Length: 111
Figure 1 (cartoon, rainbow, N blue to C red):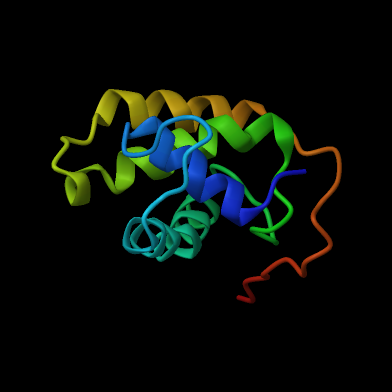
Figure 2 (cartoon, rainbow, N blue to C red):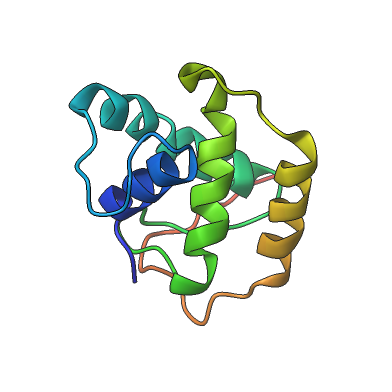
């Protein structure tokens, strides 16, 4: 399992903002961290990836999620988001099946 903090750091590494083994600027961490919940909500609402706790991220999905997050915040770092990359990552996430849920309650829709 990976944590939210690890996810944010990996996204910053994907953007080239932070090198391996380096610490990120707190402003950069805060900017990316603010997009973690919206990312999970977005992916869940479109049935791409359902996961409850952003501090218990499945290892199999971690890199895909970090790249998706980096791509979604790219403009904030002077980069252009890549729509083809986003679609490819979402396809990969759809194919992954978590072995177990994170223990967080799942949202239900009542009709």
